[in-house]
Length: 179
Image (tube, rainbow, N blue to C red; front, side):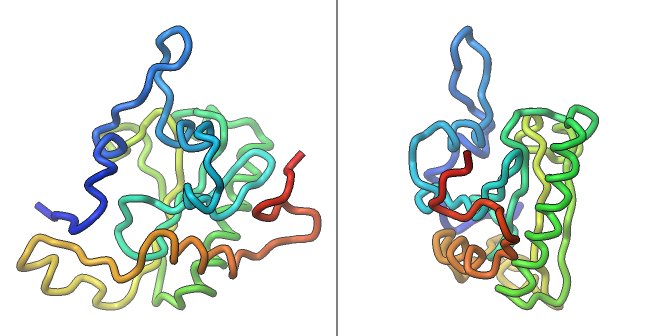
């Protein structure tokens, strides 16, 4: 089993524990982050669009691992509106460009895990993974020690990706009012 060296303080995220909202409904960790009142810098939000945002994965496979997801909690692609679908894939394309510019990876993994059996740790809130990959990026630490090392903090990675995000005229920029 692969072990992580850091971020054990985020066990609630991994365990899928969520806080009850009004009426006892469960709220995803992503919605909790959005409703926290904390800044995008503090919560590692890299980009906000009208319907979709990008955030650092707090349990990354590697440095630069981003998640792109709608603000609205939906479990499946079929549950997205047409506008959400369009913005989701446009934002995934921008995320890929930002990761390439910031990290110069040899390749990328882009994908979704729909449902818990597919590996979805938060199956109630669809999210697309954008993961930079390098030839030989698994090293002896994963093979021998069942441990993964990450050479960069989430804050540093978020800052690096914000600096390379391909903003287009009229799009939301960190710190601006999206309304």
